[in-house]
Length: 210
Image 1 (cartoon, rainbow, N blue to C red):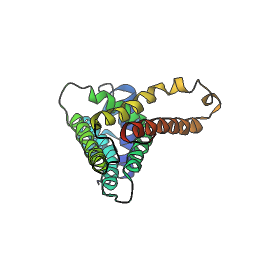
Image 2 (tube, rainbow, N blue to C red):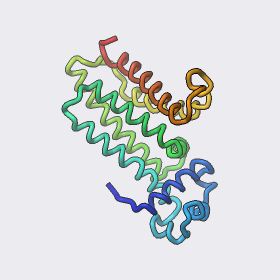
Image 3 (cartoon, rainbow, N blue to C red):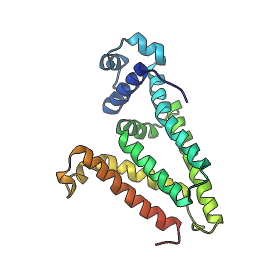
Image 4 (cartoon, one colour):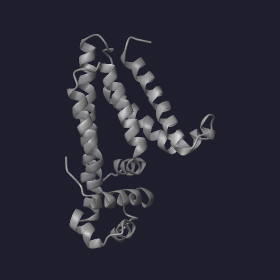
């Protein structure tokens, strides 16, 4: 896992926010340098170009997910449904906690032109599918999960639900009990609500339990 200095991380986080707010093409290296309080030469030294800076943001955000995926796959103490639930909570916390990055990621997935960033997105999604598939297959062979499970659609359901919640938060906040919550309480409320919904849904799709 690549290590980044505090200055590099500060630049990455500023660039991530500006790319999300203004778009990649609407953000200049000068904008990033001013916001991060560094000179343009430092950004060029660390990252090379604006395209490489965006690519580094994706690599940085994805590396932690890749590490989690590998650790979960190698865990022999958890039951299959526990692993699925752990995966659900991991991506709820990650995606709701990294909303600038999710905004950029959504935009890049719609990019019709081939790019290193788009390739990274599909590479990671392939790895995540590769994680869930053996969990489901092993549980099917043990008679724990149903045989006719579409794992690709499960992953799509997981990410699609969380992606939809991100822009819908202002609507959710208008309904009780969220109306009287502060921002921290509301974030935890949304995470718990999404987690409960997805776990119930996945359990119904995967298992013989009700």
